Image (cartoon, rainbow, N blue to C red; front, side, top):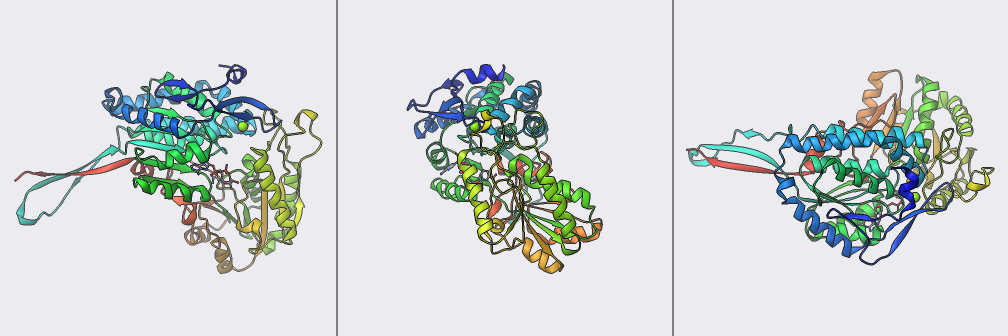
Length: 495
Ligand code: NAI
Ligand code: MG
């Protein structure tokens, strides 16, 4: 389907295999961040729609067409879905770019690329996730065969953000489906379109009705209803730490399982012996990729005093050279922010940085001089603050925009203290040619992911998640399978 055709029709959402309006009949406009204009609209689902979707997911869990699939056949459905994502890659990338604002090349390489890899990788797990036989020591000489089996958790509620819309949805869908669960997915209200298109492909791949349901709508209504629903067995959330806290609270009603991927304020550290040209490229990418709207953004850069000026000059020049424009233009390197609200929130951090004494060395405000068509888009300049310190909001808080705070260090223990001086613990980066030093530093930084001489790589095979207030649990890899299964221990008297 062409993106123009998809956008020409007001979209519906997917409940129990039917494309439906919200019960209330209310709708939400989907906006183009490059122009501020309406692309199409989506249903404003609420608690009544969540109830319907949860009932459909519950019924699908016991449907023999899903429950009785062999592991290989479940894997084959996921593989078919990976094929369909690959076949529709250009269309999905363009749709993601239009709805979120990001450059279409980023959408193609990262969002669609990740989505495809996720379904491909998790397609292999249903036939390989084995239980165990356990050498137990029962009382009274009973002879026992004790074994474990992994069973689906049940109905999974997934609530995802707007920064990597379809890819974040797939981070939840792929392992949930691989382990035999059914899903009610609530995409972000700002960016639901690619997920609705993905849901069509899920049907085309042959997943039975009700296995995946997508309810679009606001967080405070649809999202909150899903988090609190007492017939949902697990909630998987990616988004802000503030909302993660509310979701954890809402989940206590029926003690549902909870996994949370939350915010970050990741330290990126440069030692004096690092390859400085590579550092400048990577440090710029770490903060400006996806307009800085990345949970692992390398937003605190600590540069050793000996190379501070060189790195800062290189970065400032680099930031000024980035081409900001509409995501649909192939020459664009950075697109608009996702929404007027995000644009205002990040703008307020620019004011706070200046007011608290940091120095702007590149950017610092809205982009001007774009074609008239884009005058109302949410374009912000790639911005670098020098002379930053830990008393400042731009250093302490997640900005979620293209804003870097650069700091100078000399003593390694002090560097480690500063790197860990944050309520977050999602990721970190280390640059040095001395790998022994790099490993020692990696061990001291409290973060779920540490990149050494690279930044912002993730893979379906490698666990991802946060220490401290960056979340609960791990996604991806072998580690995530536990989050989407219950383990049953079976004791058999064989005396
Ligand atoms: P958010 O955390 O409010 O939104 C994420 C998802 O949660 C969306 O689907 C939203 O509809 C849903 N949601 C919102 N309120 C809810 C509630 N009470 N119950 C259940 N679901 C709810 O993020 P928002 O407001 O769009 O962005 C604000 C800030 O959050 C950003 O500036 C950024 O700092 C942070 N953020 C962090 C992300 C991350 O991956 N670390 C992703 C998105 C936002
Ligand atoms: Mg949009």
